[in-house]
Image 1 (cartoon, rainbow over the protein chains, first blue to last red):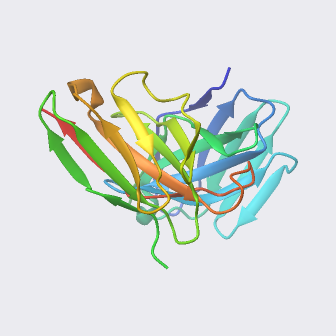
Image 2: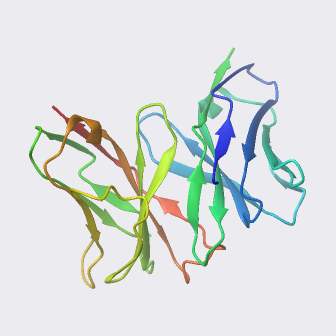
Length: 112
Length: 116
């Protein structure tokens, strides 16, 4: 079956690193995504990783993929108050088009 | 280059009325996806359309829901005889290329439907 799970809440101090974790079940996933949703807004694509990669870095963001354990993580370095949002992990299901399966989202709260 | 546009942003309907949600994809995009987000949950896939064709509607409720993406104009998600359980945020996303698994989806701001 298709399922994506995330922890629901994470609280960090400003300046610290945040690590948001995600597990997925479909081993045929081709791409895995991280989206950010601010209150009342749509989803903003943060980054994605192809399933044959282990790591991808993009400025303050580092994505790690453990394909054996079907585990994905997003690390945000030097977390700022503007990073407070809900972060969604999503996998694309193979089958010729990009149907996304989302986790329930991790609410990140950044405090001074 | 405008992003994905959805309107209205907020929609209030009484039980039994119809809701029509509109989505204009990004310029040049001919693939549209609709997702529903219930409170405190992630997004759930509803339907995938290309121009004038429904490709996958496996996430659509069997009754009262329909979607279209005509040759001209926006994609429409229609909910007939709304019930309170339809209250949710409905997001549209569009993509450019062939709709393959390598395509990036760009999301609109969503329509928040409230059924009284």
